[in-house]
Image (tube, rainbow over all chains, first blue to last red; front, side, top):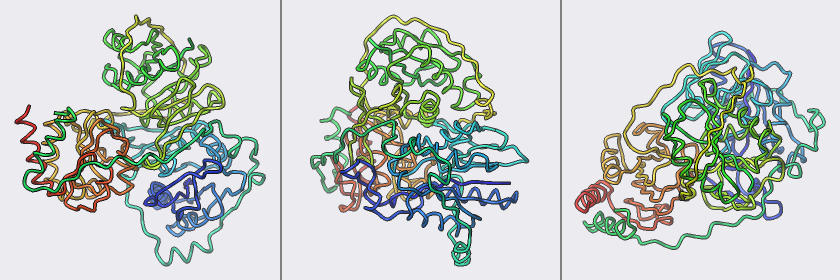
Length: 259
Length: 317
């Protein structure tokens, strides 16, 4: 079985994020880069499928050179190799461009399963897995809290507002996972050492056969008009409970007409 | 006026509240037409859609549209966009809604903006990003703009019209039927409003301490007719089910009133609730960062403050 896991390097989840004043894109230099948290669950799930069914796990990422750290982390968890799309002209690519680049690179490589995290903690759009499925004409099995592979059939539990749907498809298929699905492993020392020797295929836009006019900020189909830090909230009232905190809170809710 | 397509969110034949918000928003941009995908359309649904200004309702009736996730919905919408040339498509920012928007964008070669909290007459969307710390205005520059809009962003305003039903039948491609829904499992219903749509959300976090601790949170929620939420610390610890998690990687809520109990307020949580209109915080730790966002805060033990509040609400009811 051939499994791809698409991962993204994002600013540290716990760091404050901001936009660049020059081109309104995310300031990726302002914070440490880490693997998007939900992508760790995707790597873990791919490794579990591999453990049960054999085959290889290939990490796929698009991002600047430093995203190589995220690739190494995934390799040290146990993936076999990686494809890293790196080119200055990717800067500012929107979800449409990203899905185009990733789908193009994945196409024709014979992947049976393509894993994603269900959202990135920076853009939080949750659309790239569905877009890649659309572009590749594959089934989408997204927002999975459970994945079962039997032969060439894949069944997931898709999380919904009311519970979950059981959704089934035949390979090849795109799968995105939510954090409830597993507990990602920590890279072992052995894994970290082994990762240094694993093959990483680095591809530029030209290497990957991509059309540069569909990529980057200039090709984005949406444009940021302006942005601003949210005006700080006027300081509210904070009281210390003196035995009547609940009553004071009720008084506040009454003045706001909630009760 | 130009036509704006609004995709109806519905469950068990009834129209969800977010749809009336989307129709209200669509009226700023043009003349809203509703799009009902799946079975269950009725006079009751038509009345709700008409009340909020949908003169036309395109109905793609049939189980085939919902037996396969997302892809058939995008095909129905792509076909409507081709036939009707609307000026925009507006969809709710649910998981299904965002994925539908993404696939539609590729099909009709158009830009997409997700998680808008407002749209102007000129089609400029407002988004609140990075845990609500930054407000961004942006617009689509190519094709038919597609917007997904967060629930509770706009108060619904009625503008009654008579609704005409227009049946549409779009053949679904083989590709869109590759994934098949074989079962639907309803988690135990708690009888409370939907977390993402509720006007009031009462949440508990690390300070709740144990699964049993959520009893006081639930009691307060029920006294207010509110939904219950939980921080990631509480769901990770297994104290409350995962689907109630508010924050990054969980649900984003924007209710009229958000009450955070025993939640310190890391960015992870703020990302999911910062745009709430009124925020109340109860925490033992006076240094808890969430107090910075509080309209009203009480430094104290939630197991004393919350039950006292619940009592007081019942007394005043």
